[in-house]
Amino acid sequence: MLKVGMVGMGGISRSHRNSWKQIPEAKVICVCDIRPEKADDAASDMNAKAYYDFDEMLAGEQFDILDICLPTYLHADFAVKALNRGINVLTEKPISLKKEDVKRVYEAAQRNHVRFMVAHVLRWWREYVFLKDAVDSGRYGKLLSGHMARLGNTPKWSWDNWMRDPERSGLVPFDLHIHDLDWIIYEFGKPAKIVSHRSGNSDQDYINVIYEYDGFFIACEAAWFDCDFKFTSNFRFQFEKAVIEYKDGVLKTYKKSGGVETLEAEANANENGINLPASNGYFNEIRYFTDCVLAGKDCEMLKPGELETVLDIIDVLNEGSKTIR
Image 1 (cartoon, rainbow, N blue to C red):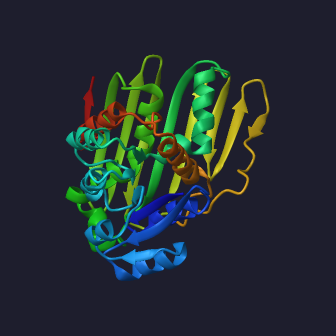
Image 2 (cartoon, rainbow, N blue to C red):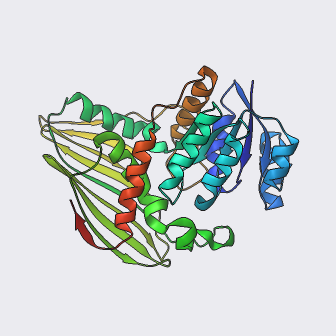
């Protein structure tokens, strides 16, 4: 039985907690948050011990895996501290706001012979897995274009308002767009050309980006709107023989030959506790990470070079509207 500790008991932690409950080889034994009410609530949910100080939890417990659901700017430092104690680490995205932290974290994992993974969940999200297979198999012919969007309202609820602080969250590029960008790099590699536009600030932030590849392009948008705008994430990819669209939690394939196929609803899909469709994406990624730990093998689904490429591109996006080759 793998023993699991968790740190950061905010909104995203509920998706992780629901997933750990379904992993028979693992048990969450301790949770930590500097907000006692959050730690206590999570401890009750998981039948675990609550801590309000991370160093005290490290000193007081022996566990095999640390699951980090902290604010973005804390991910790398907490990961290294645990890795240096021989603890396997899963952290929420992104790995860091800084590219140099990729090498620092992975070197700590290698030095201590433990596993490390960033939870870029779209790699395990069923509809994106379906899309990847459609591209890789070529069953609908050549890819011609793509569109991906991730839009929501400005987060005004975060602890210490950290999400609206550019130095701690990185705003929309790190909070929202990084999901789609990570999937793009995972599937297609580095683009040949990037055309980006950005407007707004910590109250209202919007980016529009076109990633150009040989023979196709992918247009993306991501935003925090300063109003009561319901979160939405979707994609639409155009192939020679079909259009695949994911919208309102439903994936449909519109075939050139006629007819529309709808992907059946996912059996026993988990409710995520946040503004997302029910999905087993979080379970799938945590199941994968657990299997890697049990097998003593690296998490090859996600490579450090891909993380570095994503952070390089976000640096470009943060410079404002521009074109690069």
